[in-house]
Length: 306
Length: 59
Image (cartoon, rainbow over all chains, first blue to last red; front, side, top):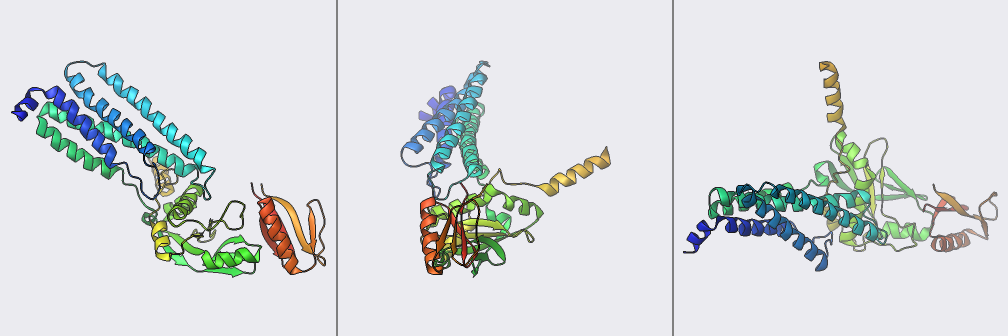
């Protein structure tokens, strides 16, 4: 009885199922993990509401196109406009908050987060569109399968790479040579006060990141990527510093000769295992990823051809 | 660009120039003054040598 009704009202079924799957896609991609963002409940509500709108837009487009209502496509461009606004909103909020962080996220990280928020809405639209399309083409069960598949696909696309993909992370001892602080053989900074030297030796944990290839060497040298690592570790383990303590600064420095990245982190809770995990799980920033070897290869090939 | 906003030295070091110079009696007092200046000026204290510290502002 119910199924007959679903078959006879394809338009409505498509719209409802599409919206539901679009919303579900947005929910499954909305997570407040260690990044503590978006915060519960208000930040979440904004994104859930936009997710519902995205789902509905994607779902409605299909029946409209079926009924030769081609102007419906303009609605999608309206949605795109709307979601670019989301990106702006996220960027502005995070930039404003960033000035009040003890260890800032940095512009590159913020840009990455903002782009992800925009991208998730498009994936919600796509999920809704596909499931709605398959309801119209095959029937309600076709929409169900297509929706479930695109949910999986959307989650797969949203999985970014981590720092361990491009570099080997290892813990290294902090050394004081007079006022000069080293991690392994990488020079970090000059620490003047005895008090700060003591705190750094007691609380500090040192890491050395060795890039796995030449592309990684450039990526890891990016200042935004470095700041992201420091911020993430500080979020997960706290940070042993306060405003007006410029001597106690988590810092990342390159060993110029080797291309290795030396890191000093000052966690509030000195748990070396957790700190190691935190560094390993830092996302690779889109803004930081460079592929100079590929660029050089392509440009030399082009010369040979032309 | 980073700026030297203060110099702390024990009496027997030869220093001079534009930045405010604080003379300390001994190395202990040098640490105390450098500590105070670091917190007040929100600028890091760096050791040039054991008898000469500079306070550097990076903001």
